[in-house]
Image (tube, rainbow, N blue to C red):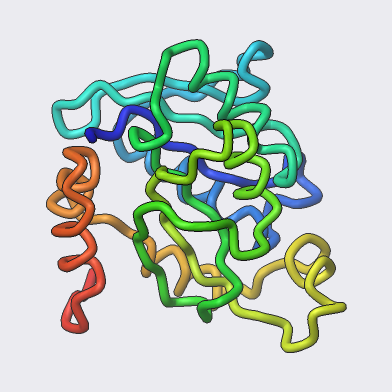
Length: 196
């Protein structure tokens, strides 16, 4: 199915702006700038919301203003209001299973311990068919340090740059994602020779 809604997960406020947990939000803001889509706070949707043309397609963008672990409140509100199916969504978020500089597209699946995804899945009636952009941020090595690692410590500039570069979707790949041809998009995006 074609993608109609793209959301980027992150925590609200300056305090969290440069943390690893906000890399999905950073990616979404970059996408909005790239295609000239204004994001404006929308109380009903519990986030900054915008709608515009991306490569000839009408797409809605959402930056939840909730904390990450309540992201489903925002995603669910937009999905319900505009009757958007989970399979018509792309969610960008931080992925601790990958180091910074590695990024993967994925269709469906579980939450893998990510509280933001857990919230989104619950808000969508446990429908997990949405596409994901998993942006690697690395792992602290000790599970007990995870919260601080993701939310209290600024992501080093070199890691942030590597993550941003890895998450870049060329027009060709983005077009395939929006078309709903995720398999072909993954083939191109995950190709070992890909350089952006």
